[in-house]
Amino acid sequence: MEAPIKNTTVEKKINSGKLGLKGFLNKRNSQSFLTWVNDFLLFIRNLKRNKEHSYFRLITSAPGSKVIVMSQDNHEEHEMLLFASNNYLGLANNNHIKNKVKEAIDKYGTGLGGPPILNGYTQLMKELEQRIARLKRQEDCLIFSAGYNANLGFVSALGKSNDLFIYDELSHASLYDALKLSNAKGISFKHNDAGDLEKKLAKYSTTIKGTIFVCFEGIYSMDGDISPLSQMIPIIKKYGALSVLDDAHGLGILGIDGSGTAEHFKISKEIDISMGTFSKSLAGTGGFLAGRKEIINYIRYFARPYMFSAALPPMSLAAILAGLDIIEKSPQLREQLYENIKYAHKILSPFNIVSKDVTPIIAILVPKWMDIRKANSIIHKRGIFLNAIEYPAVPKNKQRFRISLMAQHSKTDLNKLAKVLTDVWANPKVKIEINDKSMEL
Ligand SMILES: Cc1ncc(COP(=O)(O)O)c(C=O)c1O
Image (tube, rainbow, N blue to C red; front, side, top):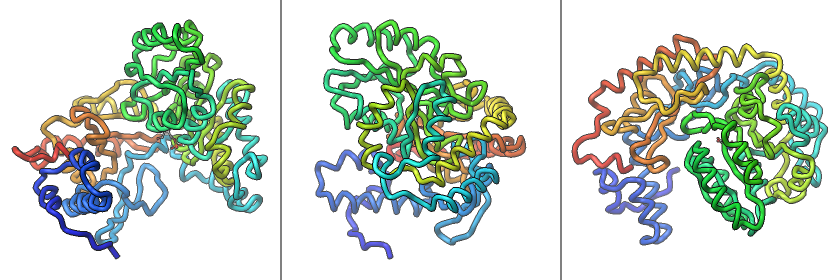
């Protein structure tokens, strides 16, 4: 049963479009906590009533290129084309992986009830560490229960008060959160701008007494562009800093063997700490850090999310190991994905695509005159499941539809995506009305 909520004048403001999410967030300090959460509930209910709430869609099948979604209003199920999953190689519903998971459950049960250091370190975890270290051309590796935790882990373990983290301004939220857990200072450099990175290194390398860590990603998750690693790495080395690459989206996708972005540039061994997750192309959960033996050994004993959180269960480890078998043995999956990426760029070229780099993430900027929520509601009704990235998550002029491609999408699927987007761009209903404040939402 829905909790009864107090009707306040804020509901009228929300309904009339006079109060958006940003405005709402700004009111936090001037209201009691309970009024605030009550108003937020009204805000979400209003979105649902207007069919503009595209979060927490209820999936009732495996997430392939097609997925079954259940309407939460009438419980009807609809097949949709899925362009919102980072399951780029389609491994989430693979028979080899599912069989290996079943075997692992029979052998090891479902969980370990503790962190690796106490009682959660299994043979499967050790095997996975060794395979990832090999794939990343590093000496050692340790496995976290999420990529988010891997970022929290290395920053909290390594960052001391006289150290500095210099990071790309478009870094993932996990790095920003990690810095809040650490005593080290942090400053950003302009996105993918090796010149700005050098300026920052030149300025701080003379004053910072501790270590400088430079953090960047392989493929950026919101723009879909690739880091200019071959320009950045020599600069980082020149100033004696350590490089930390978060390659969440490059693993399984880039490089001759799917090793990732560093291998794409043939510089895997130059990376000091290589971070990744199993939640994208490996379609599971978990994350890792790989690097020199002494660095990984230290993190193993001092990373708080590794020490104080339960280990990945054997069934998850078995899924990732089996996924690595497929990445090793099936280069054709990557080839299929690249074909789809190239084809999608061709047919989506009339739209304002953020980056032309060949990655499975295609971000299409939403024009100033378009109401992103109304547009996404129509896209959903037409059977396309993609993600709308709205203000204030991105600036107003950078709102976008984020499309994730999979190897299994067919040309027909991609053509349908392009047709639906073309129709939506031409639909007068998605135009922002004069005096409509929905851009504020
Ligand atoms: C760049 C990047 N780093 C880290 C993460 C966190 O990974 P996980 O989902 O495994 O916690 C993500 C996931 O969205 C990501 O895109």
